[in-house]
Amino acid sequence: MKNFDYEPYIEKFNDFLLLRDLTSNTIKNYNSFLKRYFNWLNTNLCKKPDNISYEELRRYIFYLKDVEKLSNRSINAHISQLRFFTLYVLNKPWDSYQIPRMKFNTTLPDILSKDEVFAIIDVATNLKHKAIIALLYSAGLRKSEVLHLKYKDISRKDMRIYVSPSKSRRDRYALLSQKTLDILTRYWFQHGKPNDWLFPGTKQGKSISGFTIDRFVKNAAIQAKIDKNVTAHLFRHAFGTHLYEQGTDLLTIQKLLGHKSINSTTIYVHLASTIYKDTISPFDYEDK
Image (spheres, rainbow, N blue to C red):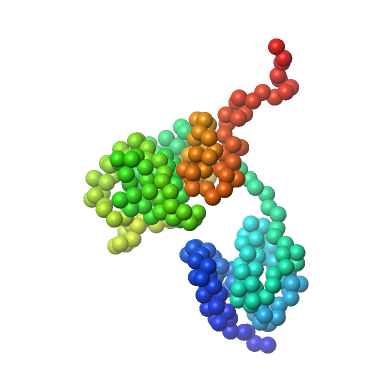
């Protein structure tokens, strides 16, 4: 059998993605996953997706694991796409017992100390870069939230930042640090008083790109001689961890970070150093 035409499937698939109002990143990823699956079908089975058995689907999952060497998390994302495609496009039932999701290990991220954060901010001589790194840390913002900030989102009067809906699909208010506001003010005057995007990019009408943020964060960490895998998201983790170490309750941290579930916030209990400093092992404890 010759290669089948998968474009009608792609079109129908995207119609349902739009009806579900999924984020642009999810739509992009799901399309990439589906095209990889179709290419595998054409190369290995030469069958239309309507006629694929669960045994053949499992062969594809093993291909992703053993040949493509994808992580278990990534494979679970592919399984989610296959489930969506089967239910919505093929209009067929999905049996999660036939295609179970894979178990995966959860590893704790590196955490920057306050001294390390301050060192990275201090070493950034470009005021635009300095302001962005300060916002990532002092407000616990996601990289995507920083690059979508508008000038009007910064409220000096209330000392808070309006964060438009992003990953959590909810808007919220974040903290505006006085030190960060001072840096932002200097940046704003030095860079032409931007009144639309707070951090314009090189292209007219566009904000700064995530790639640019990743690049100068890495460079600043190297200049500060921080021997850790420093990413923009690591400042968000530092924000949550340092708040918890200061005694801020988890519900407040959850609201400030925009987590849907408190379960996402409890990671900072494990990352905080105070729980180890203040807890005595029973082997060392002596009754008075």
